[in-house]
Image 1 (cartoon, rainbow, N blue to C red):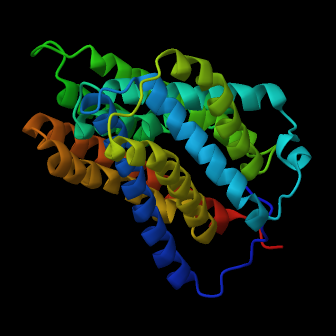
Image 2 (image 1 turned 45 degrees about the vertical axis):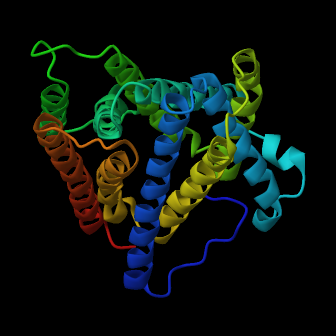
Length: 313
């Protein structure tokens, strides 16, 4: 995956890896801040989910347009040029969908509950990559995926109590996000990431506008105005750090640090809403994180074995 800026080979791999880890951790903290602000706006300020979703996309879209000269992109033609227009539109709609479902879930669930369910997405991606992308997993990885599903069952506890309807929104957000990631991986072969990012923000801004204006409410105070404006900054900066981290180090080295988001979600949930995860959520999240980390390490080991087995040039 490349964008308009040049990619230079790392001069110090160990330093680049540490920098990438730091960027990844900073990115997930910003994503946690995005979810926290969205939950606050919906539950404490009484704004509609459609309004908050649209504010996130329009804010990030404006931020992207401001930063385009830094990427060497000066014309609209370069941003709209795609080799798979239909798939770009589908991917963009999926991004809007997963954001909307996630914010709907946050209206009723704790931050740690929603992120625990969303953490299932990489496992679903690994499971669906076979039939959809031809990237089949072996028996050990299938067991890891099964362990992850058990972790979600422990966290949600269906049949052992009243399952909030909002859990269905969280599962919908996870499922749509898994499809979004699969399509993103596929699109990486056809379009540069900056074009893909632009389409997501463009579609989110203009498709979401009618829904947002239909339910628009004037922000009640300065704090809500600041939080609405911060949504795009948090999301946009987080995605930029995320992409830059993957440019500095291989995915297998930094992907496990995605799960640091659980810690930041718990911290924000306690600081802002006074929420703490229960023992079931922690137990389920532990299994999900363990299975996800195992899958990453397994991918790294298989890649290393394939590299060692490759014939010398």
